[in-house]
Length: 187
Ligand SMILES: Cc1cc2nc3c(=O)[nH]c(=O)nc-3n(C[C@H](O)[C@H](O)[C@H](O)COP(=O)(O)O)c2cc1C
Image 1: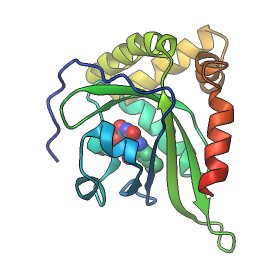
Image 2: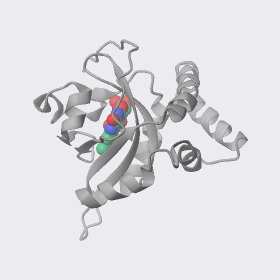
Image 3: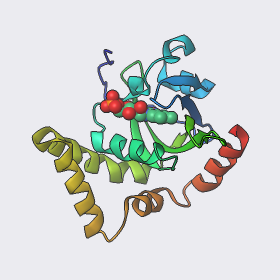
Image 4: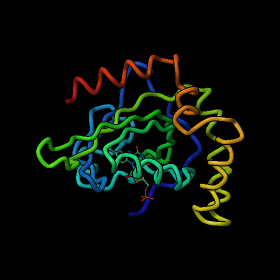
């Protein structure tokens, strides 16, 4: 799939609206709310049936998506700060959270839903240079090199991935409350 060429222009998200999308177990989009369609700049028809990597930004290191899939494939949640690419080539930063739908009889994952809000500026300012470093290492030594750096960084800061991301978004826009409310609405 050909991706738009990034413009360097940031789309500022409303702090009051949320971006929701749903995929099958392989990350193929099966639903997008109005705000997702508006911000991504694709029509609903262009999004449905496409891999979610349609909004992948080339500045995002692979390791973030590896962590994400490792977690959500187990039916677990993960919070991530993600830079996404709109059809125009402009980008938008979100904090995302996931909710799997699990078959109560077979325990199999049926689908994934992602809930996203505008990322706080401080979270963007913290993650942007880290992602740049991870991407640079990935280009030199593959994902293993970036993974090693990420875990080293977290260890040096005496934290874990989850605590680190939590500390960046905590108390800034009531993320936790928002995500739990959204999950109740959508389940
Ligand atoms: C529910 C759900 C939502 C996702 N949302 C995004 C997203 O907003 N942006 C993104 O780059 N990847 C998102 N992904 C991850 C993509 O499926 C994909 O793994 C990622 O874009 C990396 O692309 P690649 O695997 O082709 O390298 C999402 C996955 C799931 C399951």
